[in-house]
Image 1 (cartoon, rainbow, N blue to C red):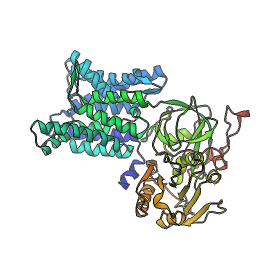
Image 2: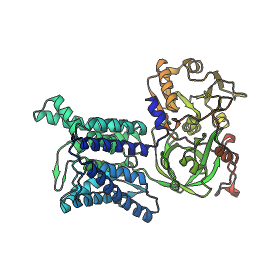
Image 3: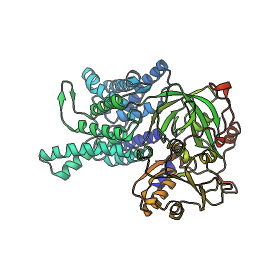
Image 4: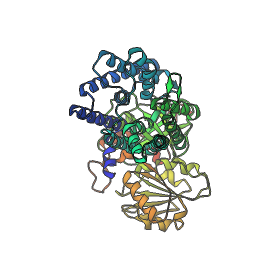
Length: 553
């Protein structure tokens, strides 16, 4: 999967989902053209257009009302999903019905909101309205989930795996899928089917694959923590698999998803909030940070992340939303940071150029990259480059705890936040090809270009006892897992930054990645005024004790 992770680093999660769904549609259209699937390719394309147009139109109107710019690609994803469950036809009634269902999906994001976020999966909400309202009125546009066919199952599976790998939501999808199988397969066996036939029937002819890979894991309607997400996924699997009928409502995937969304809203609803840009800085060579002050109290724990939405930008293939680790910046402020290479993405350029006083949105704050509850348990932290950011807040807020941080610097470039880390109690091991001058006390240097067991064992004789955490590129995570497994460490918690996927276009003569020219100017302008503090205090550069921040995952 290393090659896929490398490619995925240049494609955002939303774009990955769009391409995956387009692949499913292309396969369905091709099979329909060959006469192998009872689907008209032209009608399918028209249904996609009608559903997407309905979703986008209501989303645009809702954005004007709420003051939040509509997410165009999200509307396209919703339209592509709806076209997989509405029977494609070229009749006026069918296309009008698809448009109305898409409009209902878009309206759900506008009308069913709380704390700045929509609460319902738009495609599931649209499908529910289709069955309860649109179909009885028009006599068409009922959700039939025609995508659930054995011919398309392999394509849906592979496309879904790509999305789950890119978003890191495989456990949530598995929780739903396995629960649905555990509920449905025995029921079919009791009705007279053989066990293998029942399993094949559910996987090939029930919409379990598309629901698991594309709908249950919809990011903005999930709880911010792992355990609630898994619990809700299990509940949705049970509701989707157990037959029941109550008035107009009956067992369906869309009803189960909406019920799970409402439960999430009641017990673990995340909130969106506005963040004001209050300064810029540089945590080290080839990186940039943005200081942010929340419009209201931001609840988060050391090691967690926020999904940042830069509304006013021209999106590229990676979209306008990214996930960053959070680091405290003092006076209720936080900061995010990212590496800057030869060709920064449109998102990074927009965030780097954001003037003081402008705003961005945090659509989600969450994550489970948290230290053990037991303060006596020793901890090992392994980071590469900007991947050190989630550890900054953990180290600074952990108190008198036995922590060892291993910084892997294969190119010889100094790691970020050296001076800030030097003021903590953590022991630090730097792995780099060249010595680091003037190391602080309790710091050691190990020669090398990659993580090795000898580097870890020399600093930690009690290595197997430690709780291990790894944050960095997919290559670093894979290497660290292998080394820790060899050392006898059983459980490793990882924070993979898939944004590392693409390598810099060229390197300097010293082997360090060379920052882009447009990245150097913001670093040079690290001192900018931070409004709201005493005498508009100047924000110090991070490397001198200012604010570091998280990297894109």
